[in-house]
Image 1 (cartoon, rainbow, N blue to C red):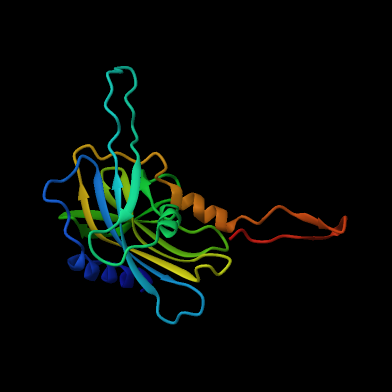
Image 2: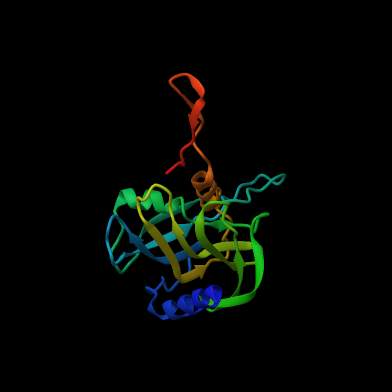
Length: 210
């Protein structure tokens, strides 16, 4: 039931997406809605941002052409924009790359940007409370469609990302750091190095990385 609730929420969010440029860029443009709850807030703050991928550089090297481009993140044309500091943290929650070994294809799909996109799921590492769904926006190219997570450390208390708009250009390529989300999840799951207390190995303890 959780998956179908997520699919329904994504479908309902799409008509409210900010309009994308009339002429699609060479790369991809993805608009997201972010809900973040900090401290003791009962109602999460709702923000909007845009992720743009940069096409791989075209060179005269006939031996090996580059396969990956870059990406950048910034405020969406409409909606409340995250602070610059928050934008930096958000980039660590994004995904724009190939399926990889961790993504599992699902039978469900969504219509995004006028195209039918198959959904994939990424199981979170043990101990991490998160739901992650990716959309196949081009052959063998996945983008984050939905993320709901409770980061360790309690700051923020929870984050939720919805893909609300999509445009894929003719030269769209995976981002070089496109699997940043997976690295963040594994960092959340990793304990800090074990430290001795007062020099006594028996008093050692571990701590989760925020």
